[in-house]
Image 1 (cartoon, rainbow, N blue to C red):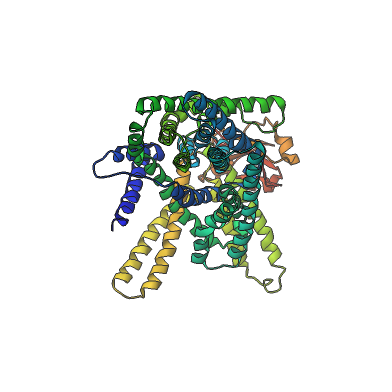
Image 2: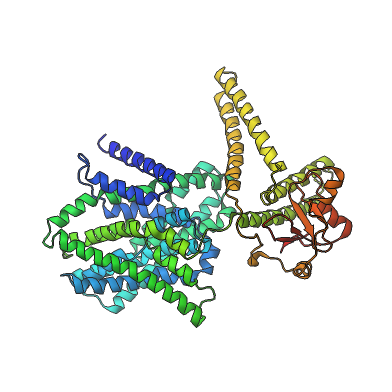
Length: 626
């Protein structure tokens, strides 16, 4: 009971704090840290000491795994230079500079000072990305910050380990280099081997609960062997998780992927928020130790504020200089802009790894250990508060913002349209099979109609019409139907007319369908109107029809709306304009679908959106955006 109650209270406080943070628009890590500090002084709480092994072995592997599982391998390859700069070079640079400042300032040797530098060097993955997503930053910048935070812990922990070893015995630059190489190469190798093992097992496991259960042990399958051979368990977990996430569509069933994602969402939510509550809960104990130390609270606070200022100064200077150098020297084809560098430089919130690494410093061998731990706590809370609360202001000053939801909607429509086109090709190829050659025509039309409905569903998200599109009509009517169906099933359950297992399966199917509708509605609610909507250059097609239509200045034949709908007395949803003759027609989700009909009648290949704030084009011939 004495063990279970604190755990329940921790989880309950974490959930409540996260809900309050979301309701009032604050960062969860910031609020939970503040709650933890307040509770650490509350009567009856007692001394809280979070063992570093619990963090590094219990919290870190699953948190790294959950984050890396969703990291894009393509993005990592594309931004590899930026990620190496931040996760290796910047961490080492920060550790050395902080080490020199601490060595000059405090009554400790260089080895202890360098260990402190390694402790405070790595920004926290959870804190940075939680704040970045809450305030809305460009997707590429968030990807770079996530990539950095996945690998910088390895650099920092190797630095701390080497400096700690130097406190107890002599080390040479060669031994340091060998240790770093073993940690890196060994971690990568173990990660790849762990990926191959888990991928082989997952590929042959078709049972969903078993597949999800296997994913729960995956972080330690990579972490423990790597640590056993003194390599980086952090790198091993990240490498394995990134590869598993990339290959998941090939090695797992769809049911397993959906269940795994839902389960890991819950695990990640609890762990990543609880660690910040635990950071705050240790504040009273750490401060008490400093008050009773030889240096005292006043001098220790001065040291801590100096290290905090050094840490906060180093990062933006390094990143902005690296961005400028990459642009001038042209050694990096995709350097961060100076504005992106300024925001990334201010996104340096420290977290649980910093505090856990501080507790790794050996007692007895580390001079003024309680002072170093207090400094780590100050840097963690200081960066969370100062940078966490002001990062949004800095991003706004640099005129950086989250991706336009309408641009995402346009990209989604293009991807779905391309996938449906591929599906139709596969459908006609399937008819070559003798077993399917006599497939009834109604089935073929039903399949074609289903694909068309999915495509139209995505295109309907664009435009600014007040008229309800077919998809919106479907959702509203279907939700009322689902409510009635569920009530009837529950009525039959309450009367005991059917076995519970049958009822449970039917309710589960209804829940899945309604959750898909509600998720789509939440996604569509984020669409807004800001700058003119164009197809991003990276996704524009280069067919000859789009090239010819690029400079088209054709005037619209009508400003009143769809010409054919006006003649026939029909309503339209969204409008399109032919770039060849200016004919204004309605989209395929409208009853008349006159834009596509105009293409079939005239052969004019390219249309453009005729909706306010939209300037994207589409080639009917090649099914490409422009």
